[in-house]
Image (cartoon, rainbow, N blue to C red; front, side, top):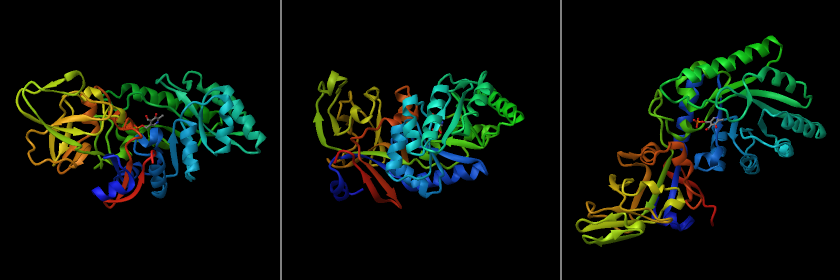
Length: 391
Ligand SMILES: Cc1ncc(COP(=O)(O)O)c(C=O)c1O
């Protein structure tokens, strides 16, 4: 984006570009692969950092009929922003929060009888029904009624007159690794529960367990619906999964060189003096730091793209700035764009590349880009919207 554009809408010379066309293209490919299986788009954690409201609105325009978040606040934020489609809150709630589920017409993941009771009572008082997806814990040990007790629990839940059990869900702790044996065991547990309930005459419309890894590698587990996040944003969940799609990375984090300096042999750079020049070096100061989600562990090893080439960080990261060695880039000037994550020219620094260096996962790298970075939404390469919560 041009200098004038960026200064029109925000002053921060560091931002995230979000390519809405890339999201639409990724969605189309995933959908084409699913056939009749429904897709629930996961937009929790501010759509993995890309901006929940704008991404949710865009997905709704693309015909997505159900979104998933993990807190009531996230769900309410979307409702207040005018999102009309079904919103599933996959996070646990407490009984005294049942009111919000009913008021905002949310679908709620639930497994605790006190929460079910509260939802039932609230819905009855409002003359409506509360929509729940019963969570079954088949091996993640996070939320859900244990798969060992699921039949009795669902039977009990089916007696609540103001609750509609729209779905049954479980989650994989490891669907994107090479070894699928545990995921397959979970699937068997889940399917056995479904068939026992069916025999008892309890039919739940939507059974769902797959995340991105499951979508790619476990077609036999797609069931009625899949819950997809990462693939929509253009990234595979690991390097071990099938890669049938031409995914387009939707996010690009960009900054502009704020200052350039030449340092001499023996001079050091930044806090902790983690880089000491062995010869004359040219250092670019980038106005983005760990408070923006750029991890401190990248000191001296992180890479950025300048003029389509890789350059390496020098020294430690500050809260609001970091340093790059540009000795081999004689033509850089203050104001030049630098890509921290994403594509530039034929090169790419992916969230995986960053994750590998900091012993993390691409999910964390994406979700951590902070609110100080304006989100700039693009269609056909042109800015359609800008979100800057600060101004
Ligand atoms: C319960 C649940 N379902 C689905 C997803 C989507 O996962 P992914 O981004 O791998 O598609 C998540 C995200 O972690 C999740 O917590």
